[in-house]
Length: 260
Ligand code: CIR
Picture 1 (spheres, rainbow, N blue to C red):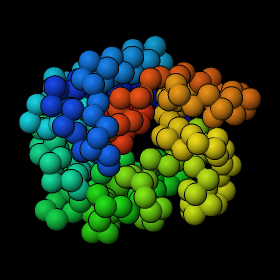
Picture 2 (picture 1 turned 90 degrees about the horizontal axis):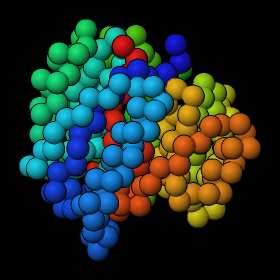
Picture 3 (picture 1 turned 90 degrees about the vertical axis):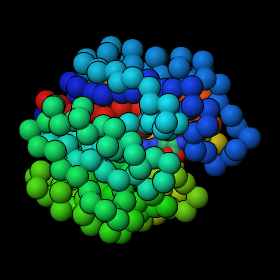
Picture 4 (picture 1 turned 30 degrees about the horizontal axis):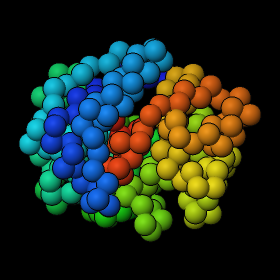
């Protein structure tokens, strides 16, 4: 089983409140219908890649709750409820609890004062990288390392380069030994032993790609990065991300994935 082999996923349909989601540029207001369309295309692509997708209903009280990757981590051995570092997102973990409790052999949880977002967690075959960020604190990361150990995984706490929301904003796993990363992440990243494909100039946002079984989901607006991946033999599935990009989001954030 490879760490990017998934047969199960949870997603959450965006609510209308998504237009009030957190973002770096407040002038970039996403269009609700287009967000919905991007989400629907993503869910369809997961299904086409062989994943059984459970679709949770919108949570209007939490504008960013469609980004289910952030409040939890999921593995075949168990799930971990996180504590998202943005105050408006904290309640998303509790909202997920009943769903996760019924689906995993174990459900662990971060405690009070232990903040971590799933967007800062990059799972690779030997190491789960945890990037410290404005959302993920040293205390949260340390607690996460302990929970990962309980589930048989080795966590490693690393720095996130400045100027990005999450660690995975700038890097994703392409296969067991290859990463897709922005040039700054490739230069600064703690990735000895990995091959790194860098995103093309002007296409930094392509770095939040998502490997699912045999395919790599990539933002549709990054043609030169897509070429690089295709030349290396990856089966690239382009997906629209223009609207969710306004919310500083990419392709990993919209699902929680695991192999049962
Ligand atoms: C946020 O700022 O929390 C959301 N607007 C975007 C979350 C993106 N999540 C992710 O990359 N894992």
